[in-house]
Length: 129
Image (spheres, rainbow, N blue to C red):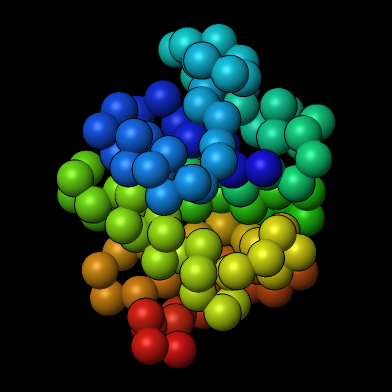
């Protein structure tokens, strides 16, 4: 299940719909609008393997690593959200739910920095990897 933070712009959500990428939105389909970020973590633990996308840097905290979900900080311009979500979901290291679980990723124009459960170091993949 793909979950979008309420800070993802509507025009970007529409692009995802046009590309037939299914998702749910915080404050619309799940949870309540305005829910504090830290209060979303218990919700993610109850869902079936969500991958959560946000423009909020707070979701890049390695402290929030958990094998039951994936958190993705989109460190990009707001008008590029859909494009970089699609790139991330097609990347060979993240193209299935099982590959994404237990990871926290920072997606940016140069590539993907990520942490994974059980390891203390940060990894980097460029878009060509």
